[in-house]
Amino acid sequence: MLIDTHSHLNFVVFKNDFKEVIKKCLDNDIWMINVGTKYETSKRAIEIAKEYQEGVYAAIGLHPLHLETGLVKIKNDDEEITLKTKEEFFDYEKYKELANSIISEKIKSKKLVAIGEIGLDYYLKPKTKKKLEVFKEKQKEVLLQQLNLAKELNLPVIFHCRFAHQDLIEILKNYNLGKLKGVIHCFTGTLNQAKEYLEMGFYFGFNGIIFKKTENLDFNEIIKKIPLEKILIETDCPYLTPPGFLEKRNNPLGVKLVAEKISQIKKISFEKLARITTQNAKELFQI
Image 1 (cartoon, rainbow, N blue to C red):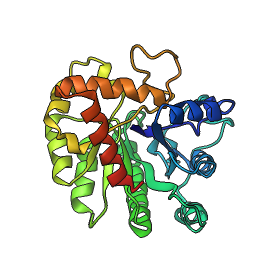
Image 2 (cartoon, rainbow, N blue to C red; image 1 turned 180 degrees about the vertical axis):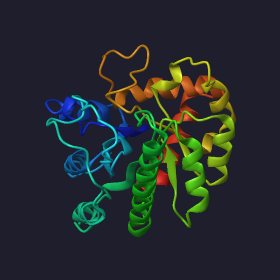
Image 3 (cartoon, rainbow, N blue to C red; image 1 turned 30 degrees about the horizontal axis):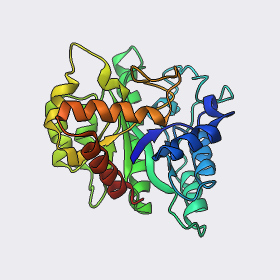
Image 4 (spheres, helix red, strand yellow; image 1 turned 90 degrees about the horizontal axis):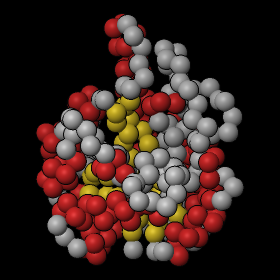
């Protein structure tokens, strides 16, 4: 079996056929974690997870791109949400209440498995130095609040990080992690940054982005260096559709192509890659 540790069937682009997609995935022995990006999509992830006895799980959190800073204008992603909503202030108690709404229910299998995706994103940013400093500080402040929520609920963290790895590393080094675990989703950092995350015990999520060639990143070299026991596979669907996938819109079935690519890079069998990454996911998310 395979586990897509980062999917978004809770997004509006799957509104009309998410049940059919999930059935096809489960029939092909592929489990998934639907990850929240704001309150609306977090709630939807939980609602979907509750419909299934096994194989479909949820994570909740506020993505940095959806954070209200008043400093940048964020464009809505029509694949993600239905309404043209405003950016969101993080409400600790509201997210805690959402988490407890499912934790407190007597569900045979645990459905809420992580806080995420949370983190730092400096892709869209203010142009002036002063505003940029405020912008970054607001993201860092909310990240720390969500780390505290993860610790309180005893849940691992799914980190989103874009153009901000050094800042994230510094925050985590200075934060009292304790037993807090997590994964760096869609890892696009350097090999040296990967080593620093490894020293803190984090996992690495890889998806369709590893098929892309860039001047600054050598995914083959990075994947070769990261221990198999610290690798998770994901799709980030509906985005990052891997080459050869039958649909333009990605879905958890695409995780098989990611697994095949990593097994080739690692020069191991697909079966071994599937077994160990599944074991990794089950260990981190306690599923």
